[in-house]
Image (cartoon, rainbow, N blue to C red; front, side, top):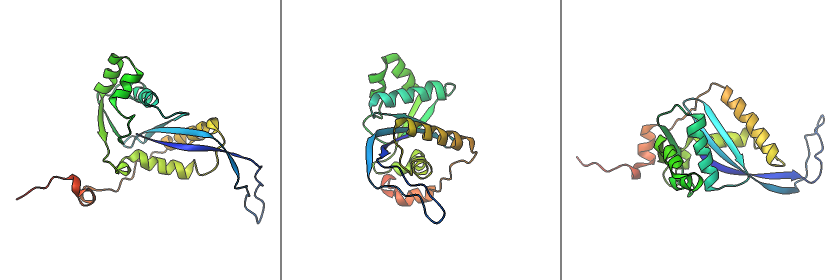
Length: 188
């Protein structure tokens, strides 16, 4: 799971449509129209993802979406491994802030939380999905939150229907070289 934000940008002048011999033209001037916060959950072995679009970036928003992951997306799972970065809202305390203690405990009991190393969020495959979203969906001006929600929903639907698994190329051997400071030193 990972989070990012997208600036909503409105045109101040209507773009000039493309025509033979000329590409579309638009003014560099724009009007900032808020920020959409994206919270992505990605199950690479199942080729499944869900993106929640919100107008805020709070501990309770994170907790509500983790609760949804546990109780709606994977209600039959005995254990869910949740890989994420060390953002201050990504903790069990956020669940207790959003829910009564028994509910928060029930969610935490189903989770195995794995934090990526500091400066190692690229090890999180959700980060790779955000790269794809940026290139395939967010590579243009999106005027407002409803537009962002609609575009993201269409992208998620299409991406979930394709049966291509993640193509992760970082091997154990690569990890031993790149992350050698994290591995214990063994003496003979």
